[in-house]
Length: 192
Length: 420
Image (cartoon, rainbow over all chains, first blue to last red; front, side, top):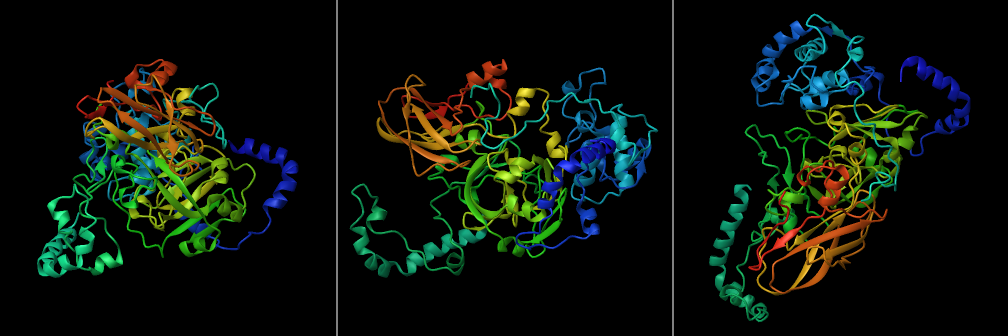
């Protein structure tokens, strides 16, 4: 939900929820646990949502990313240009003319948001040195993988603002998620 | 298996030699109970094992019991780097409903080392759309009201294929344990959930910090922040010191080494979530939660019937939708079905053990089991699911909860009945 929409929702729901929020503000029942500092929260808050709220400042381009892909040792597992290695393929054999779902499970192609690519490199790479990449390096490597698959151009600058706005090949071509409720069958009309 | 256990075996031989005469004398009354079919060794009493400090401190199973977990799906665990991926539980040897912690299946996000976490340093932070972000130590969590419940976990990749030579290969990526911890709803109420929070992100402390998005409705219903497993601390391979237990959902949601929960207002689409995306609406809806599923563990593929006569057919049944209400068994490839009996009371989102008497006439046949859960959902055949999705038998999508056929040959050998 974008900021204007969220604001509108707050205004509309504000009065309605007043009673409920008084209840919600009631004090903790057990008084167990301590309040984390803002800095403690920021240090652990690494799951990047689709609107990029949690992205740190930084920037990078595919050209910089291509150099890092070699210097950080990515090629050893993923192969030169992200293909032919032991680790998962990072470049689709097929171009953008092929339907995205048929291009294989290639992260920079199938991810519906570019934030997912940034998030995964940041949390999970390189193998054995996870969490060691600086934000600029993650932006640059993300740019490299997106450029490799023709999602962005080689000189496109990825940063806090531009990354969440990248239009990914999948778009919104994926199934909506189940609306889960307790003690409810998974799907109406599914005979089993 | 370390050299330590071999040492114990040496001790056993050594001890038996040293104390042989005395032991035989002392054990003489016991040999009177030896059945007529007993071996000569049994007639003279078993070998004796001397007390061992380690065995007093933490017990071990008999070295005659050799049931072990195996790497799942052809990918080595550990691999050349020491990374562990998926490891399956030996269901063919299971009795009762509890999977021993040492034999509980293991799965990791992408192949992983084992985090060696000091519980004194471990924290769980809850933040995002809450009135009061809070951080809990392990000691904090143990002060709060706890629950103890039986629940199964099952990996989304637990799918029987014709390649599976036994029930460990076809169904071994599920296990059932007694979990103890604090309800996530207790912690969220302590933090105060803000209106508009619809999803939460759970994240682990391991190297990839595996994270998943789940609906708040599930958090408020039955998710456990678990520190206990089968009466002791959760094992490292299962998430020590703290993990989520998300009853009935695909195993990956039960976040191991959980250190952070963030309440948000949308599906967060983390790396694990992206792997769950589907193009087809039906497949997406049938994800997340397991449907009713059962399997006969004895007799099952790889086992050998001694000859015609009486056998109790026994197996496990479970469902992500609640407790199992009924299990039926067929000994003639589905022509007739009979109700099996439960061993104990089936629990919600937990393995239930069933049994059914059978007199084998020595002829070739196929054994089947199917279950019904508290929502009235019935375990389907693979043909039924293939028809629903209009795909070939070997390509049924989604979480596989279809009926497993075991083929019994006239020579008593049991094999996998799936051919495609």
